Image (cartoon, rainbow, N blue to C red; front, side, top):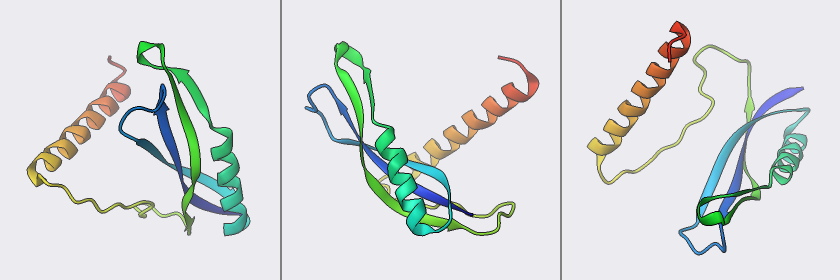
Length: 119
């Protein structure tokens, strides 16, 4: 058996869908014999994950599975191994860097709270 990373894409629709289109890209860990089986297994997971729930104004929000867009074989696990990468272009580099640093600070604080048992 091999481990794969699969990217599943869902469309998020709130109410009648009269809003800016939104998509949820999820990275899933898949165990399969080969890439073909990993692809089919990822598709089955996506098809089984159609979600519907109420959102603001009592409208219904749903996640509609689109398809699997990427599969990556995970070779021998190693500390620090790259498992995902994305290159982004941002109009405001300083704003993006501040956003990354703010998110990192929040992750660190959450980890410290968990480690120390404080809320």
